[in-house]
Length: 502
Ligand code: PHE
Image 1 (cartoon, helix red, strand yellow):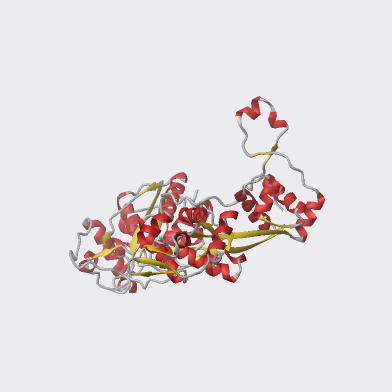
Image 2: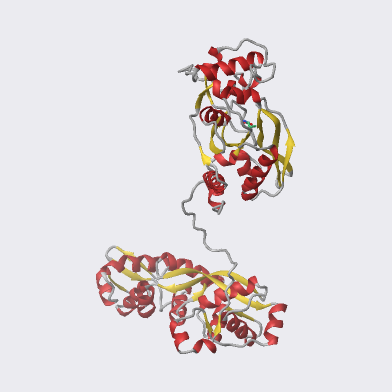
């Protein structure tokens, strides 16, 4: 149990003195606390199961200004018949009103009610008394007096007769009602145990002030305890989208590891996207199903003759690479077609065509496009993290080390390398990570060493380590998502709840 505050302790003690059960008002009176303070304490105490709190609604009736006035002077109809009695039982309306000291506005009211009560009647200009002696007080008048005497009454505690009178007086706007609630506290078994153990009353300090320090009073006062783990109000401040934060982190980690960033256009020729990577022109990935081809402009420019030639020959017969190639007639037209790049490997191979000397360490984090059905794990537009390392003695083991370092810095604990296949790498592998929420292994990236069929046409004479993988998959693991579409849903609640990564 959290330690009790002073008002809670005062409330418990007052309740014990009142026999264990009392209304909030009584406790307030006994403890010297304000009603609202007792009520607040009561809520905490009932949450702690020290008291039980029961509430009952009731209506409090009190007099309006007019009601108070009538309580003093008598109702207008009563005043009217009194004056009639004085005037011998019959009088002109104006005369009777004058005798009764009724203002003009009240005369019709007095006449109306006198008639309704059977006390008098109007005949022509005259007003006649219909009773022999002054009638006894009606329940409306008795109630008026009762409320005047007590200040207010609880409607629910009145007799049936008075309750009806409340309605009448309310309609006459002489009485008004206020909705109230009656709160009663009762010590629970746990509450009794607590008060029996004894509760000290001492002042609690909620704030350490300079005065407390200077005067050294802090040594002797008791400080309130705060629950520092209690949730504070939420403050949905502006921040970068979680995916942008992850992109930023990916960049920072590569930079830390000594890589340089490269970027390329979203629209590429099939040459860089496929041909330069030794993917045959009838490769299934090139089909309309997977690749978005541009309708306008439809074709782009190929690089210099020397590179195109090498690629063409390698595809056709293996050229100088020792390979047999794919054994078909390579088409310039097919290679010129413009596509939305399906992977950022198009950028790394293009970079290699222009930079041949090791050491090279470059990466890119960029958008790619695939004509895919959007599902919980597939998007048609997403980001890839891509990179290459060119070094005289680079091996696949170095690549595994590099990727392990990268993903570990990202906070991914379980990572493994499994064999795989890509047309442009040999050996090929994939890095996989365990998704704790989905409870299964997920591919992080494809990787491998570029084949001679890829390197020869670019004029590269050294080993090239290459990899590329989805950023959104990484985000799924990082953010504990089981649906990749969350990242693009603009779901405000989720965006607000997702903390800043670093
Ligand atoms: N481009 C491959 C993909 O998009 C990944 C890859 C990059 C594989 C480089 C090997 C080397 O899945």
